[in-house]
Amino acid sequence: MRDAPPSAPPIALLAELTHRCPLACPYCSNPLDLLAREAELDTDAWARIFDQAAALGVLQVHLSGGEPASRRDLEALVAAARRAGLYVNLITSGIGLTEARLDALEAAGVDHVQLSLQGVTAAMADRIGGYKGGYDRKLAIARSITARGLPLTLNAVMHRENIGDLRQAIDFAADLGARRIEVACVQFYGWALKNRSALQPTRAQVDEAKRVVEAARPQYHGRMVLDFVPPDYYADYPKACMGGWGSTGLNIAPDGTVLPCHAAATLPGLVFPKATEVPLADIWYRSAAFDAYRGEDWMQEPCRSCDRRHIDHGGCRCQALALAGDARAADPVCRHSAHRGVVDRLLADVPVGDSPAFAYRR
Ligand code: FES
Image 1 (cartoon, rainbow, N blue to C red):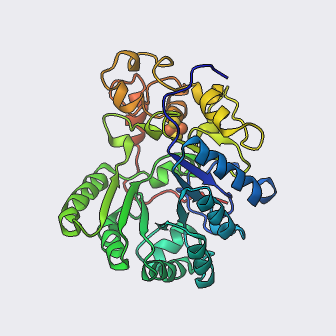
Image 2 (cartoon, protein in one colour):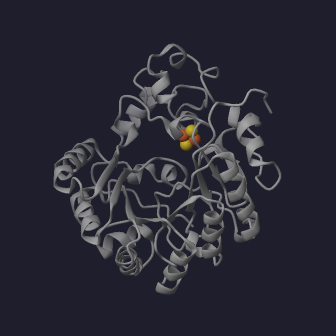
Image 3 (cartoon, rainbow, N blue to C red):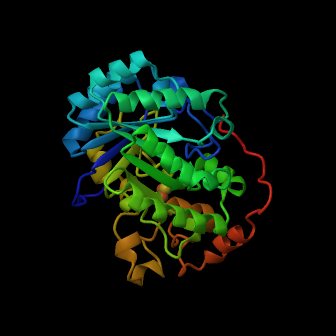
């Protein structure tokens, strides 16, 4: 624990309510070691966390998973978060939701729904999700969400299998009445990292995707927001992961472990406290884990003297560990990183023909 607190409280809390999920998407960022139902916090424990988060300054909670609808108490959790004064965003595949549950979620005060889209055809969506019939159920729920006037964001994770359908995905979101589509090129954590060679798009696919997004923007201007998260391996500079470690948001795993990001548990040498054992404010302001990569003191060269260190904060610690074997290294995506060759070699090895088989999340 340290003495001097960081200047700002967190804005957002990602609450991973469960790792259970009826889908088995190979791009999932959940850890390979999924937590069992028995390890999950109960309703009251989450309600206490929401109260603490609001007192700490958190404004919005993202209820995520796994599939949050796998929890029978989802409606009670939404109500608890709203009672705490939080803006509630439900991140869901839609599987497990029904008209009756949507009624209850509306009554509980859910503010926004973010629905995942695995593909724009039943064949593609059900194959990526590993769940037959999932597409039709998702479509029905999406229509019901917009018919109720609930704000809907469609979250389309794009990869080499479905990125060719990007234009259809954008039009699909608009036809559904979504207010926003987030086109997120797959990021390699958890199950996605395990499936990297099957999911990594080619450079030609990425260039075409950028062209498609730019062409669609004017058409949907003022009607639907179009966010594009480019694939960072093809970038010259890394993303500012989490807006900087321990600076704007925190994640809580199903068992109450509090993490600065969804993959932080992969980092060696850090002890992450549980929200059921340590007050959230102490974890945020005084834990060694949240302090580990805050600011710039931890940086090595080339980050330490780089002009971009205030922009990208050295990139992603978890990616530095995964690709360079050193969480303190510059994110190897960076052109100035001594490990950029690792990324370039991975991109040179992207298959151009058939993809390797998926390792489905189970
Ligand atoms: Fe952990 Fe980027 S995912 S710092």
